[in-house]
Image (tube, rainbow, N blue to C red):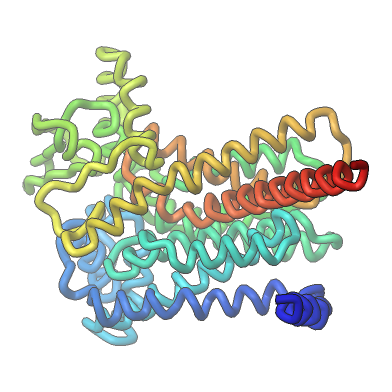
Length: 458
């Protein structure tokens, strides 16, 4: 045993220079990316080919992607955010009809997401152990593996979100003005692309604007560059969407319907305006209500559905409290309800056990430890003016996660809304668990020292 301990001590001493190298976090991230690629490639390309699961949103995204590659965008196309169909259009142009290429692309993006999670987590505590724990947790986190096997936005959005977070953090921490501007502009461009994939990320922009207006000098300049680049990406799409609709609009028109459904008691909402009957539902509505509603306005009339949602709230103020149930389900704080009669999320039949386990364990093992650690740090550092190297990373992560909570409350209490941001929560949880392990180790050493001292005194 002594020889083993001596060998381990020597190995640690020999590895110490490599672990202290500035390149160590990047090397670790690359290794984690390779670990993450294997299960995603196996799932999306071999076990769960995308072509077998083209129903609901998946069929719609593929239809929009192929249409975008073959014809001009129309007014009805504006109901679907254009970012993910644009990626599908590029892949369709490269290999028409080859969904294996889409699966391979999503597997690669998922692997890069895990690598970026490790890089981001390293900035929380400057700890390779935290980076490894967060990266491996993301690499093996089943919901993120699961989504690579569907024509859905989760994998692409998660990659763009983590890439933005890493670039923005580099901008905020960079020591030179030119570097802050370059990274800030790159982060803003990626943020704009992420908004095109999921316009719900617009809920995060007030945080960037607040930093640009009220932050410290370097933070203000980095955030300003981010806002500028984001606006430059979004503005052309917004202008084209507005031109197609004949009225001002942002990047898509589905927000009003989602807002109405979130605050109504409807299982779904139907509209025959425009000559075609279309029905829209969400996971929360389909699993909680039975009444089908119909409004005599086109789904493209986003303002009409926002007004209808506000009218529901005015007539039934209790809906504002009920929306918290959707938040609880979206965050894994309430039991998951399976989507009825649909072979996809929240679980196709053959993967229901893994999805259920992930849903049950997310709150106690990930979300709640991250929240408890954040509150403990805030309490411990109250009134402290000491430097906190991970403060910007933590603030950025929590600002993004807060915007996810706003979206869950206002629009859609669906775990799908949350899953793409789970790598950030996993990074914060890894920091929390590492801090807990350090405190436990210190306490054990203290007890052992006290015991040895008592033995010597006797």
